[in-house]
Length: 177
Ligand SMILES: [Zn+2]
Image 1 (cartoon, helix red, strand yellow):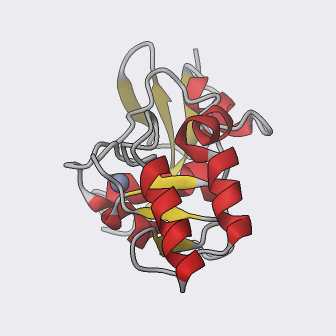
Image 2: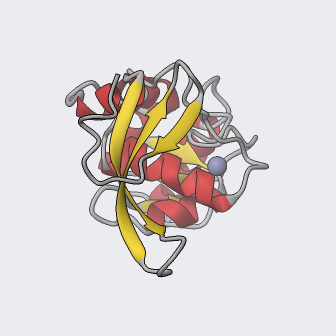
């Protein structure tokens, strides 16, 4: 029990340090949970979302849970600043990073993109290409005016024009610029 108290005290010291003093995911002050697989200190709220990703993140309370020496050492080596350098290495400049007052859906998507899909580590760039493309083209299902059935339509999302357009014919090759 003595070592448990000592390790919790080490973590409570560690969480005061710059970088660790704000939740790694939403910047809420005084996080008191931590992911011992990712090495980040997070708030109670974000720890709940980490709990939904057991293949990438395992969380413990830094006050109440038992911490083994090796896990504490990992937290000392990693911490929020080092983790940010890995998991937020290539966040597109226009990507909105949710804050603690934002809705849970935004935060959940951010946490999944960061740790589960590793979109911003720079290991894969297909996500970034999608984000950075001026023109994004895909298909959607649109209810038809006449027969009220859903029809497959091609849409184009244009960053330059700031518009969403969809085409009423499936083949848009003739409509393209
Ligand atoms: Zn948080």
